[in-house]
Length: 224
Image (spheres, rainbow, N blue to C red):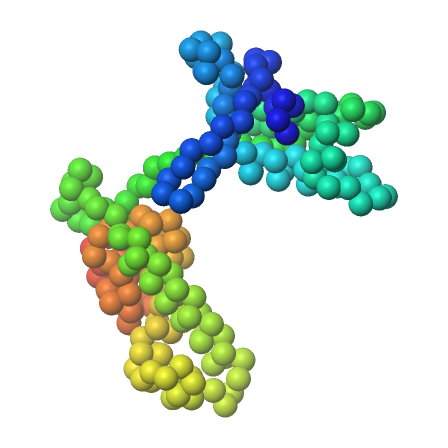
């Protein structure tokens, strides 16, 4: 893709990278930024390399359906003349007719703003989001609860005791985890997005009433 990527003002986007610990993150940066001329940059100044490359390669393969095996680098070098990055689409200029492909696309923000569900009496500046490790345990527990509930529904011989024996835990833990399968969908989404407030984890969310409005009431959260 090097040398073929341009922003929507016609500026070439140059490959670059950053490191965080041992991880290396590749991206393309509008070349005018490197020249100290940010006012000349297009609407999208920086894009993640892997996301752009994967989308372009897949789209070109699906469009051309090459009859012979060809590696990704050769595919791009042979068939792609230019890729223009626009705010809501990628325009791929091919080396042969039809000349262009337009792909819906939107840059994912590097940092998504998380709007925490605020407990009653807590001001926004005082709110803290759920810890990442707490979030991971909660999401995993919700998935287990749903899986075990599906098992009980599908298999008439299954019960909490038989699942507990297999999972090497107590039947009470199985029942408490299954209760997470009845959480309000917006609470589940907030858990996945990391928007639950600090302190709300597995222990607070197990064995709540099945009525969704009551769940919010008990947790002291505004209903959605």
